[in-house]
Image 1: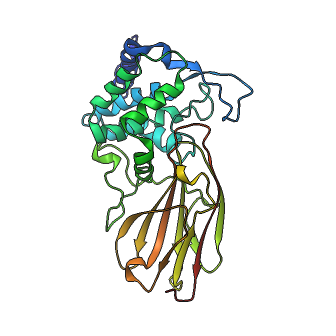
Image 2: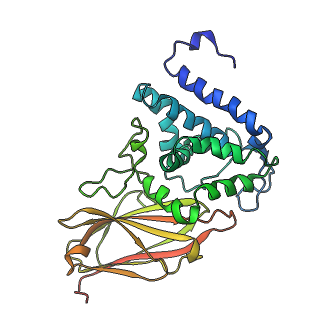
Image 3: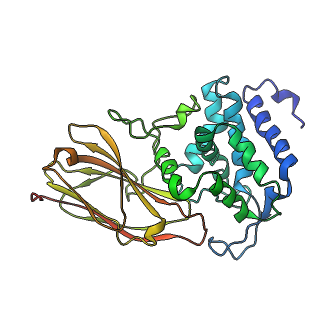
Amino acid sequence: MVGRRPSIQDSIARLVIAHEFHHLQQNAFNQPIAFGYKGTPYSSDFDVLSFTEFWFVEATADWSISYSYRDVADPTDMFNALHAFYLYGFQGSNQSLYYSPRQWSSDFIHIYGAWVYFLFLEQQFGSQVVRQFWDEISELEADDFVGTTEVLNEIYPFKEHFRDFSVMNLNLDLQPGDPITPSFSDVDPTFPTDYAPEMDNTSGKAERLDQDPITYEVTIRSLSTNFYAFRVDELADALTLDFSDLAPSEATDVDLIVKVRDGEWERRQIDPQDPTTYCKSDSADDIEFVYIVLTNHDFVEATTVRGDFTVSTVATPCA
């Protein structure tokens, strides 16, 4: 490693050194797996076979910044060198977790922001999980991009747990109730909490639900998430959410973060195959605000969830 002498006194320099030193450690496990020809018919630019850097190379190196300096560095330095990549490159991007674009393309910072997935794994298993990941991919051949994703799935199956990661990416401290728990800041106290992703609503923010149903056509890539938010009119007697048109339903998870009127925030998981109705007459279901977290937990890149969902209210009492 070589560093420019004028940069040594920069307070961010030590964070960059931790990142680059982690690259040296990666090479000790499997240097050929870092780059490869990820030509896939499921991307928009399949006409060009690109030699790309695989996402986990920069993601784990950025994780090492958090692990090394979360209790030491100035939070502003951590934001500038690390957390900004998450907020502006990864959170709410609608790209797959393992998105690996051409180097220095307009959305290349996505692979840096994806470091939070390893923070998520650290929360479940401790910091040794990153070493475990590199141990298990050490025998993979160059270009075995699918194999690296399979290793992650074996460590913590996406089908059961990727929805939890999706909900954490809503990244809000909602009180009372605190339904998004644990949070990333529980592991890294410098993590910027209460920065929600831009919603996938047409306006980019919450819409008001009155008596006109709102329908969205969605496309959810493998291992990615869409976020929506709706404010329920206080005169509405019932709220209905219908995700039954989304397919394949077996790849789809629907999580609701709801605020019960005069109550707390709650997380609810619903079956996408059947419409769900909440009646105002039941005080526990008198919902005034809802965040919808739509997740495609399938790690096979060909599996894209498509279809429509509808959110509606009625002004007549329901049974």
